[in-house]
Image (cartoon, rainbow, N blue to C red; front, side, top):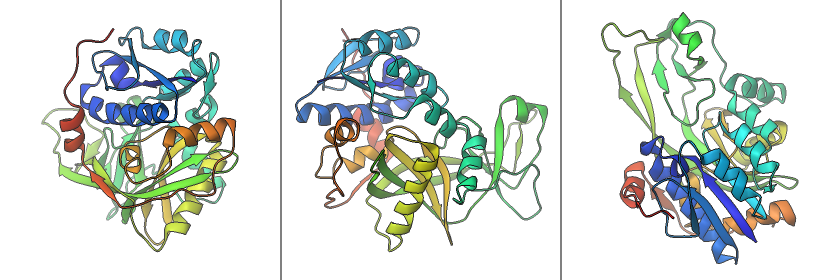
Amino acid sequence: MKILVAEFAVGTDIEKSLIPEGAAMLKTLAESFIRVGHEVYYPAASTEIGAGTPLESTAESFRQVVEKEAKKCDAGLLIAPDGMLPELNRILEENTVNLGCSPESAACCADKVLCTEVLKKAGIKAPEIAERAEKGKRYVIKPRFGCGAEATSLVTEFKKTEDFIAREYIASEYIEGKHLSVSLIAGKKPLPLTVNRQFIEFEENKDREGETSPKTGVSGIKYNGSLTPYQTPREEELYETAISAVKCLGCFGYVGVDIVLSDFPYVVDVNPRPTASLFGISRVMKEEIGELLLKNRFGELPDSVRIEGEYHFSKDMLGELFGRKSTTCH
């Protein structure tokens, strides 16, 4: 089969700081599909991953490249910022077989307000979205349509100013607990892969004098890699929570469910696409992720996967591995 794997950072060069993570996910997927006998094509602005065939792409042409090349391929998979994923997945679906989430599911996951409502309606615990700050409590301020720890801060108070609303921030209660994620393949027969420990760093980040900001008492929140797998006696509880979340949101394909494990598991984000944890999973999982994604769409998944050992990586490590860019895309 010919498979298109399109990763936004590598394909556009818009956000260079995201290229190491994007290249790590892209290379992991490409190499896996190739190992099980398939051809892989991927849009590339200036970064080549050393696997598969790069397709010349720019920030301006990325969508056109996806549409044009998808028509030539038997299946495709997209990795992009959550707010852009619905539109890009629709382009993919109209031109080939989509191995990932539907545009509708991706849109629901991307909207943190709507996603929270759907989760709570299904009886799944999620942090409450706050309209005003209460004394003695902490809140997470983040973009309503952002992904990961992008532009995310921990605050002790906030005001819903015009700036706050215009930039589409939301405030949700901060849950104290272990920062974890569950990686799984969603579909007719959901398949849990691993529980991962997320390394989250809190950095003091005072607002500059005179700058309009919706946040006060700010600490920046940054993701700095993960440990796969994370051993916990509550593994089954975490898997059940993640499976329930992807079912009620209608997800398909690889999904990463971010969870804070407190007295209960709280779902804080549902990523309807491959996540950075995949880089570690591929090093401890005996099955090929590429084959599992194809079986999920065209065949039947196994009952479980085999995990041996553990793997820890940081963002700095990904930067060292994938930070150098090639300018020889053809």
